[in-house]
Image (cartoon, rainbow, N blue to C red; front, side):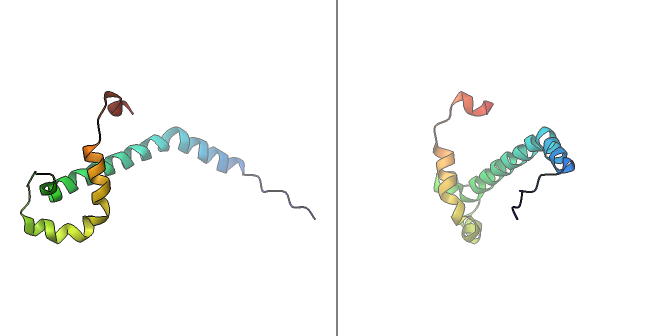
Length: 89
């Protein structure tokens, strides 16, 4: 017996189309907002790494274990060259 691949139901296709029209842009915006908030949090807590001491070192050291995995990407994002087209996309 040869099995045919299951076809998606009309309802499933309709849900995916509605998601693409309405929710996809909002979810991308939410991810962008979260990334910028994390960027700001790391800047406030670990700003002394680039010469902007905002918090006392005690609190920065307390938060260090939670921030270590993100430090390299944060530095790269902070120090990369900016362009006018970055704001558009």
